[in-house]
Image (cartoon, rainbow over all chains, first blue to last red):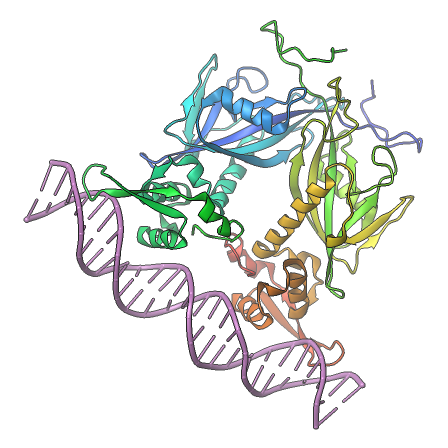
Amino acid sequence: MAGNRPKKSADPVTQPALADFKVGVDNVIFSVDTAQNRLLALLVMRQEEPFLGQWCLPGTLVRQGESLEDAAYRILAEKIRVKNLYLEQLYTFGEPGRDPRESPDSYGVRYLSVSYFALVRFEDAELIANGVSGIAWYPLEQAPQLAFDHNQILKYGYQRLRNKLEYSPVAFEVLPDVFTLNDLYQLYTTVLGENFSDYSNFRSRLLKLGFLHDTGIKVSRGAGRPASLYRFDANAFTPFKDKPLVFI
Amino acid sequence: MAGNRPKKSADPVTQPALADFKVGVDNVIFSVDTAQNRLLALLVMRQEEPFLGQWCLPGTLVRQGESLEDAAYRILAEKIRVKNLYLEQLYTFGEPGRDPRESPDSYGVRYLSVSYFALVRFEDAELIANGVSGIAWYPLEQAPQLAFDHNQILKYGYQRLRNKLEYSPVAFEVLPDVFTLNDLYQLYTTVLGENFSDYSNFRSRLLKLGFLHDTGIKVSRGAGRPASLYRFDANAFTPFKDKPLVFI
DNA sequence: CCAAAAGTGTTTAAACTACACCCATGT
DNA sequence: ACATGGGTGTAGTTTAAACACTTTTGG
């Protein structure tokens, strides 16, 4: 075993000791409850030390032979059943001491977290409570204090979500196959706030771009004129792939 | 020692075996040679197996007690002496098998790479050749085949560089304290290509924003009317922090 | 008929584009 | 004087923002 201070190579041949890591994957999973206009993040309650009983992001440690993304999908599938989702890597947190399981003196194993960002459709995301002491969709503004540095990760994920919405067609990954322009608008306002654009301008701007295709089918939701159902045409979107700010 | 197939918990109490990691940091370091209008990436030649003698990104393994960012700064400082630089995390690559040092059968230690993106000022970046078998600023289009998955990382870094230029004031991190608007324009065209904007429009757009402040000092470079030296006012820039596309 | 939701159109200001043109310097 | 790079101005077009208006439904 190494002493509790690493030697910075007194002997020129001896390399300074490398750190050994366990790698965790933590997911920031968002969904939008358009009925109540709320942006939700999935939180689970920790069932073991450290931070027993405290809320945190759903996470897991990476297993032998498993890729980072596989681990992200695994933990996601353990917590919710969902048809459509969007997932991408967020950021990697690895400062020494970010996990209390690291013994502060002995330079033992380090815990690194590769965070992933996911967006799922709220209406068909079914929470799995299997032997978990707590799992919940938390409205973002009401998120409690989280274990580890997870508040920081959550905040970072929220920023990414807003950027993604503005620049890329993520929204269509979590909307149903056909949707009204109001569904789309609700999703945007819930995430970005009321004052990002007025509905009629949002509407005409998007339609002019030509990748939303009117199915002609009308759907009525209570009072008011029935809305057209639209379909996202991924093919017609390709020219806009690298263009900034298509959606705002 | 574990067998060469991990058991997926026959016993419900036994957890599936976790992977053990070494964590590497690989830097994509860019600089812009405005004199020759070339975008350069820093490459070094590997001095040990695997990939002995092949070009790769400057990287290192993270040591005990060292943060990821510290490791990124350490490897950078080992290769170049530089006054100003911009550095941020890029992406984390961790598929099993991405490093040949991982023994394919035995589920031994895994090698994960957290990549960092850096931009330095070419004119005052002094390469350190200390006992290195090769180190070079490679024009991006002429980059050779690199060790590991480093071509992929480099490509990813180039994309990030273009985005950063468009949305954030990174350019001023690598320009001298005072610079002409042409210096700035050259930097942009070198990275983004000739046809991103014409000079006079680029110029008036930026000046109108009000965070470039004319020092009044004129500087002459050969023939032609002398140019004004400008200074970037970080304070006056703050209102544009979160606004998209300030520079194009 | 009225309220509510969907969808269209108009007006005004601002921004982008592509130039043409003037200015100050070295040779 | 003239080529060279720096800098200003403008006309024409395109977008953005605010908001009034029409259409179609449920009650």
